[in-house]
Figure 1: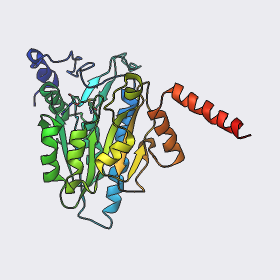
Figure 2: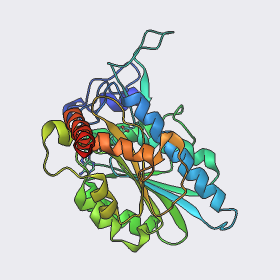
Figure 3: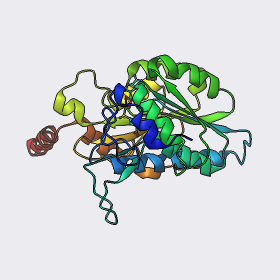
Figure 4: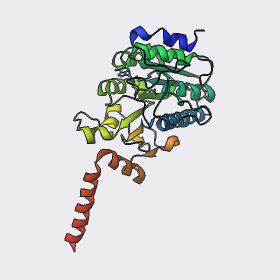
Length: 296
Ligand SMILES: C[S@@+](CC[C@H](N)C(=O)[O-])C[C@H]1O[C@@H](n2cnc3c(N)ncnc32)[C@H](O)[C@@H]1O
């Protein structure tokens, strides 16, 4: 097997990111490594674990059920985040596993038959992902991932049609750098194969508030776009207010990873914070108080 650092060393002509002594990229571009990364990757893994356990439980009644997960923004699979706390034992920056290897670890441990797809449009990052997935110490066992190099707009629907049909439950994971892709989500939601498949979106609350992006997708739009009835929302992480959002037709999904249903008080509170600036919230409180006094 190619040593990970050899594979990384073969990439500089393509502009490979700087690597640590084991060939793990340090702060790779476009992957969005920041001070929130460790926490929200771990939450991601817990959410997937809860979702897969839910399906494992359904297999008691429906033993033929299989699981499929498609990661639309796979990235490079693992990286060193130089800004994050260092390993106290070695003094080295900690290495972080990304979404695809974490999903693989959960699926391999679940005992549920599965298929895992990973799409990445940057060939340098896709090469690093393949390397991470073939490392002996990667989470889980043998590589069982279709790594597709290209845009999810072009590749996702065909994978879904092939691997999510029949007795399959699963997840489509969308972890973009900023905006959710209306194109891809709309395209996938229109496929009959996704009726029993859920969407897990990494949602950025701050972008619309601080950068005034008019195209930003709200939670309500995301629900409509994905054609699902229920939203489950995770805790808001970091200044950018990143939150995992699980969209499903299931009313009683696992709430692992700190998810709460968006139509419950705690969920509504998170959505309010996601959608409004602090000044807007203060103004709304002042208006409500004024309303109270006006009534007297
Ligand atoms: C926030 S990063 C994802 C990080 C990854 N999920 C992880 O845990 O490390 C977004 C990734 O999506 C990729 N990307 C952006 N637009 C894409 C597209 N249209 N199709 C496929 N990949 C895309 C970027 O190159 C980047 O690696």
